Length: 114
Length: 114
DNA sequence: ACGAGATACATAACAACAATATGTAAGCAA
DNA sequence: TTGCTTACATATTGTTGTTATGTATCTCGT
Image (cartoon, rainbow over all chains, first blue to last red; front, side, top):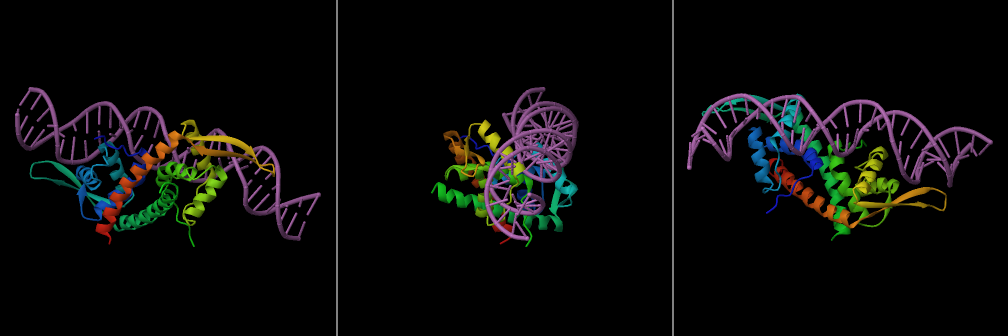
């Protein structure tokens, strides 16, 4: 089975709302977020780590998430992120924007395609 | 009432599927597409012309749409675009990708937000 | 006659951001 | 010791929207 490659632009548009929404469900860290996205999408979305980490840094820089370093028992370092209040507000705005666009697209698809 | 500014990335991700879907309903031209997007979105999406025209040129360059020049009775020139077969296939792929991402987001929003 | 606004298209300069490749480092199993 | 997974990081490159600017015509109000 061939994996549907999510268009680059769509990854860019959905990465922030998706990461914020995942963190709204509790703390997580980069590598785990990659796996969560894969599982939640039923394997249809496959993010690269080279894309994710810069996004996380940007979100932290902008104050939407906060990171803290931790060490696992096996000796691995992890950077756990949690959603800030500002991030929660941004998530709500992103959801509104997303739904405005989605509603418009579904309107078109319902008409032209059945 | 303040207009919700659609995030840049979301505009980038939705412009191609939205333009292709509009043209799937019949020929149109730049200026009219701008108005169609505004109306279809209930005024929530407002595209700039400086964004749209380069996108149309790109879509034509890539063979997804075809343009033809026409002159109205009032003497205005218009470039009408129509969907090509290749464009119709791309629209279907874009729809699949979009729905994969949307389904994942709604899953998250349904859980964390109610 | 004149100005404003809508119609209609185009492009240049700038900034944001993902894809790809590459690097570090540790744990674990064959 | 070879290979895979875990875990994070960044430089280079190309794509693409934003903003500003330019051209040109038509219509309406005064």
